[in-house]
Image (tube, rainbow, N blue to C red):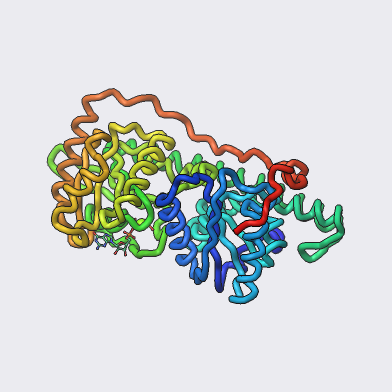
Length: 414
Ligand SMILES: Nc1nc2c(ncn2[C@@H]2O[C@H](COP(=O)(O)OP(=O)(O)OP(=O)(O)O)[C@@H](O)[C@H]2O)c(=O)[nH]1
Ligand SMILES: [Mg+2]
């Protein structure tokens, strides 16, 4: 992969986070999402020194945000030595390119940010290939666009290799893309086979799923006696971990620890990491784990998104148990409070609270799991859908370059 298309090296130092808020009536939820973005940027080791939020019913075509805001960012960047702008919104290649020129900083969106974090944490071959594939999918149209502009305007953004050099690099990218896809397909077949083999052992599988840092690995360790790595860095666990556990004379199960979710997880990333989610999809029971210490609004968002993500992956609601972790850090009446705040009755799902760290109510959770398995045994299971790695629709550089849409001409902003 040509060095120029990688943004990884720029991810150090100081950053500004930026959001175009398109729901003009939203005065609270955007804050949760922006704080989440900030936490992810900080997790990469960057210092967040400012934020820019603009509200408009739809993003501007040229920069996503207005050109006045771009000027503001440029000034701030010069004054405070800022190298990176991280957008909450997903940027088109043309917007990213315009923003790089307009702000004088490197620019990434939350899709690329998540990939960078995955990249820092990935240790297994399949995760690394999936990350590289997702990065190439996103950067190939950007790179094509940059090289198109290079020839049209004779303004090199990157070290010039001449037309021949660019064409060679583009060929190299698509060759690498198909190479990676083939390798991923092979590993997917292998992984599906492993899942099949595990199923043949006959133990019901119980998958611990949920947002990063919810304490999934801590709970997995508490349930199984394992000592898998735990930390408050996002995505400590990328590849699944498995361990068997006897619950009662009729029930021995296989617990699985999995990759964490992130709010607003891009559906393209879900597709890229489909095989990591296969453990969740094929599990007999899914524990959807939350931090009870999250503020109520954050919990509400995570609960809604977590349940719909499971549905998108292909997990029927009847296989889900909600578990609220870190009860040791919450007030004594926290369970009743969240039941009310989150209207848990409305979801009609079994739920409980635990502390994985203090090992509180682990026995209660095991009993709930055993009951769920027995309940499911009496119901016929639906047919299993097949997994396919889907491709991203390709961005057409000509389509996305365009001049400013006349409707996007902006008045001066406050
Ligand atoms: N106070 C308290 N802290 C906990 C509890 N469970 C986990 N933690 C802490 O929460 C942080 C995240 O724990 P992990 O088990 O790594 O979380 P995870 O969900 O596996 O995270 P990812 O693998 O990154 O998705 C760590 O700092 C744990 O020590 C708990 O019951 N109580
Ligand atoms: Mg983990």
